[in-house]
Image (cartoon, rainbow, N blue to C red; front, side, top):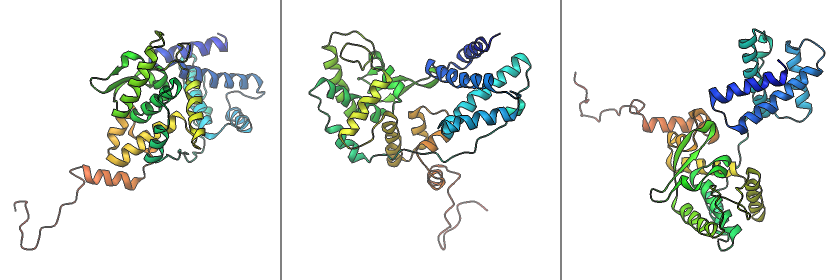
Length: 305
């Protein structure tokens, strides 16, 4: 079987077993194709640790950062495990190599007032301004991912219950609250959108009725930010949603659910919590965490002798 056919078989298996999105599968294909190209050019033992170290060094020279390399190595490990399982090939020398972890860079979140001022300055009387305002309000109100915003359809909105249905990573569906200001902005956009005569199911469309691409949404937010001297992008608004909600509520578990994270550790990193904050939440919330108050002088202990 050719290397391309082997890769196709692996990705087909991933699609069936893990229900990965087409975008994720495309990313796996790109990463693993780079590895296959490296193997074709490598002159030594392709199953040696030196082969992988040479691949990593080459990628670093090309300017690839640690986080991107971590993602590529994760994809590669899955593929090599597949090769071992299906063809009894030995890739053990490569499977245990770990990159040194780097500190995760988190975006600097604009405060509530700054974001509110930015949104209020978007002119809802124009088609573009109305659509921009609805997109920004929706991401910030409900914490949507870029793909979730782009894929949102008309049937996913329930104004009567103030809810949204979104499809996230791995095809998982979750229900999210729709804030009052987001509802106002969204109703205004839908009224303007309906008058365009297009029947595209996606909520956010361009002037010719086509669904907005991920790149189009990113560029719109970038231009909005530039007009307000702010670097603005979808993930920043999602991060602001989580951070501001956590600051006001302290409920990490609720934020995890709203973001659609399968692991709470992901939410902890995403919202730049430190251990002291987590310990404080635990101490206040868990009945077994709270220290018993000492009995007041002259007052008997509650416990029976």
